[in-house]
Length: 321
Image (cartoon, rainbow, N blue to C red; front, side, top):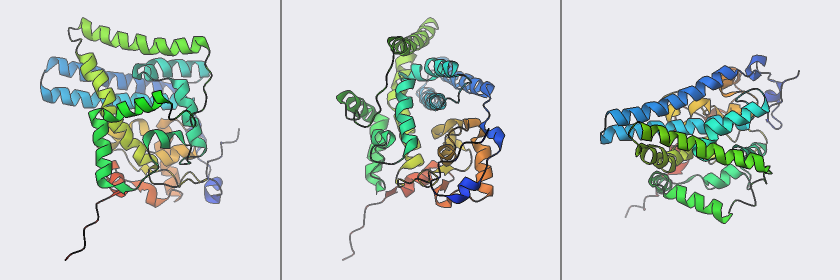
């Protein structure tokens, strides 16, 4: 079976490159370990806050849990591409119940918008551009800081929720047809997973940890982490048929990728070129592409801080005198 062609436009060098065939092979056991790891970190965050009640432990727990919520969203992303598990039914069931549902998200709705994003990234009707406001970069550094503070305070979440409710994105979001059974399953995944989480915390004698360390981080820290991730991936880059030109990658894992780019989502050029490569093979794919100098060096970074600096600019100083 021939390998999928990269989404590289007329880039002949990329079309001539053939990644190792094993990079397209799914290994479901790694996906299960990733899910287990994320939920273990969530449990550790709750346990730490319960055992050592202190403002600092609450803050650390909130950050760890928000990061793990982002990691679950990345695994939902894998499921949207059909890469989480073999078999569409198992892939969608696990992706909805163990990743999307606990975050009050619909896998099918997310999949429709995300796959449209992959067709023509950074076009005017790209759902990712609209939802994360990526179309006006570079921008003044002060405005970028205000956006990040709005997310951290929960204002950004409320604004985004209001825009969705008002239908601001209706024209660009693909219509998703769901059977009543599918819609019911999504609602149940949200209610049951969150009820179980609340029930376990209440049974342990700490019911307040559910609103304080699950819901609150989900509307404050999680949007902040998600915005930084989205900015790194595409902000300020042009629409281009060669998708190595309109995405960025962080070249190696570090503490910043742990927070903002879990499950190798920071290898984003590689993901856009070869969407059928599971997340656990992206690092090897990056090495193969880099060894052949097929990645645009201007779009390769060591961390997210450098990206934030490059997509914003300080205020102009008034002329002297």
